[in-house]
Picture 1 (tube, rainbow, N blue to C red):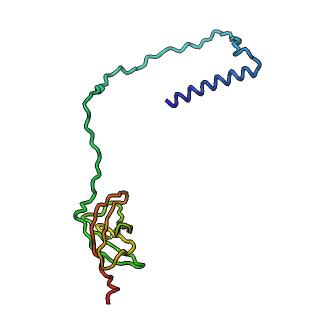
Picture 2 (picture 1 turned 45 degrees about the vertical axis):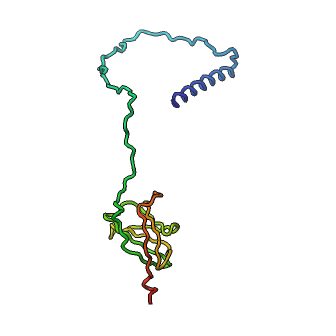
Picture 3 (picture 1 turned 90 degrees about the vertical axis):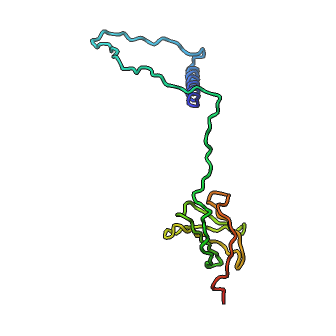
Length: 178
């Protein structure tokens, strides 16, 4: 439809330019319809082209579906979990340099997808994988507590709904014990 409009607009502009060019040449009465000199045709030995028969395909019947008032059922895609999170385990809560904490998750199978962890409703932890341990997910971020319970929520990277939630106890670091 847009292409057709462009062709029509182009044709109108082309006609207008011919009219303006004719007016600029001094013909104020409109287009000049003077007859061009005609050429005299001389006889020649060249035969006129003749039409050759072509194989034109015959029409075929194409069945078309008749519209009906009966609604057709369509499946709406629903998000499906790529992991059974009920089998997810926390296998380590540890400490890193610069007052950072590490929480390690063990998945039932190889970890699929990217994740992040929220601790105590406001501390975001980055989660990474280690090729040597494909079932483990390592999440690290700012230390939120020592010798206290903290709430954690694990999210798929592009989601705002947690796939796993729990409360865990953060122990004393071994380097802090006498």
